[in-house]
Image (cartoon, rainbow, N blue to C red; front, side):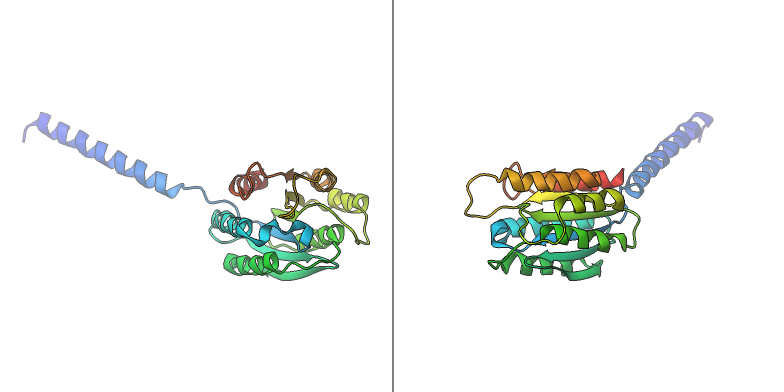
Length: 220
């Protein structure tokens, strides 16, 4: 083999090696989100029952994709809000278990009072116990509170001091026509106090863009 041929062969081998290295680097740097500790607050009243049907299934599917973003390492707690606020599922990294619990809560609606503000305060307490540094609260509610011991202003103060972002997705009654601005304003106030955000669905059952926005906010 001539000297020129050897040089050409060496150059070809170098190009192949660089190409393989670039492909390997691309695969190795596929972004995986940092794990987070989240508390999901579910308004179980009949005034927020749109999740009891197809919308609930869509939310659980979107939630599964949200959990996959961190490689299944996220930690979740579920708080149920009706006449009283209570922990329905405490600190698990099993997203399937969370989805199963959400399915039960979405389908078992009862005509009862709503202690939403107390539920947010309980969620803040549970989030503060999270194992990961990045912590958040996700509220699924129409924003209407009827029996909480704590007032909206008191919970706003707790959130300002708590260092945990609250995000809220407005959930309505299937029978209601249009949005209830008073409830949404309460959700906005809670979210603003914590540095989070409140969302109205642009299209019913479209949860992926909202959860993606929350994941991005938690990266900051």
